Length: 208
Image (cartoon, rainbow, N blue to C red; front, side):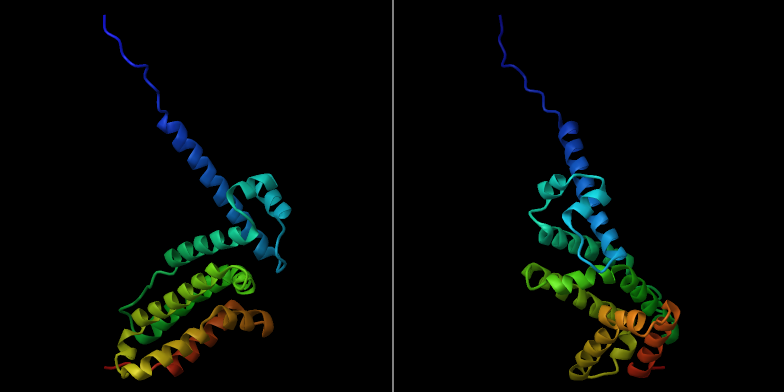
């Protein structure tokens, strides 16, 4: 007679399924938070987020320690989405096409993510990790410009290149977009045209 130890069934699909559902819930909460930010400048409450997401307040705090943790997770989500959406296009095109392409992509990002950016700016002193995300987003903007305007930037000596990039990054910032859209009431098309004209004036001449 042979004996064997009882086998323990490991239901990997069940565990994976629970993790997947939990991740979906987490993502739904983040998207609900973003949706509320786009509707109103006021910081949403946990109850409002829960109602919009279709979950309980308890479900939020099972996945996020507090609303600051939710803001940080939303920042990470936005950075990932924003980088995917802002892929450099028309890199080898002529100067005018590159400027239009870059500005259009950047304008779309500002239009979509400005509500979250305002929250990040207001919350960064409470959540130090947010400062790192803000710096990361700003440097990503500069790296994209290095790629889009490599020909023009190559005509400058290094000591002149970085100050120009910083000035261009400030020009094409979320804060700049907010001023054009909310303060000066420019349409998206007019705001893009303003950026395009400024870029064309500020960039060095394109080498033949």
